[in-house]
Image 1 (cartoon, helix red, strand yellow):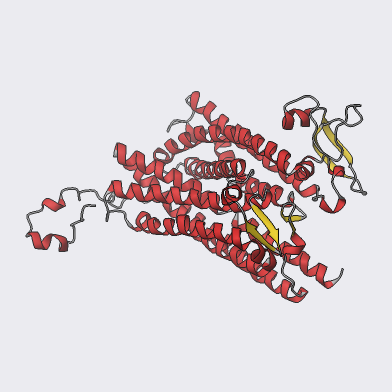
Image 2: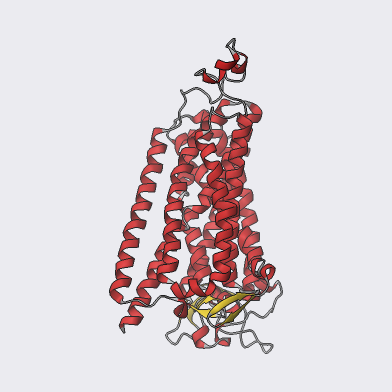
Length: 480
């Protein structure tokens, strides 16, 4: 293998590692922020101290995950410049602007309120703190929206012209609201909520299984299971919408995802069957073997019995994406989505039968162990979905306009290896450190003894103190 080809391979492995690790953290930040807001709103409305204790406990887990997301996100932005210099320069007029919008309207927005959310307990009013938590949830969602706008533009580039090695924006609205983003962003947002609900279910189920604070964790467990069943069902629909979008805009990517090599013809020589599993032949012209369901691919993608789904052999060989990784990563993602739906329905069934009470819930050991173990599934699904999306776009970095090879930095094999080792060490340290701190917080459990934030302060402004000395009183909290 020539050195330049080897360095390219190493750089691609490097960026695959960096992006795969980073995608683990933002979904939990987005979804858990929404869940924290809902929990805190319930506390503010009902004055039930248990919601407050849950908020403070899950907020600790949120902080750990948020820090890891920032660290790996900064690393990925570095990697764009180091590993994909030509692409960064060429796409700067659009890509750089969008990341700038994300920084201003989401990251800086989030930074302004996350300090209030974390350190504002007891120092600002409850409603103001709830407002801060709401803005953290909103800004996290906005951040995801901008990132998906940028990535979706790479999938379906519109509103630009590629001149002299630079993407010149000719229509900002067409570039921002590109065809892929309307399906990709809701799909990713639902994935974030689904992952976060599974995370909450796993943590709560672990405490109930261990018979620790059952009265505290059982109620959010039951709520989260119902929400998981609903969100997982909606995600199935949204995944189908995204699949149709890929069929319309990236037919080669869909063909790779489905292992579809030949296109249906009216004489019936090729049938648009859905391949459950299979493996490409040595020539790369079809599947050597497969287990398939006749006509199912047409029904899934076109909603007709014999609707045409273009096969890979319709595209030039050098424009065909790999098949094995997107084919199986897509199936892993879909299977996990189905498993999480079944888990949510299982929980709903137990709740309907009255088995999830404080007296009986701990006896449902199989169910609780399944809930706890399920925490890994949405993380695997998110990585699998990201691989499906990114590998399915190959060989393009900007679909149909710029190849990955043209967008990569030219460096020696030694330098590429240096960056791979350096990034791998850092990413491994972040992942292991995050897991360690998350487990530590769970082992410590919730704080049930400290005073509730703001409790007893509502009337401190009426203390019989000189007006000039009120602000200096150790128990005085200035109302906001």
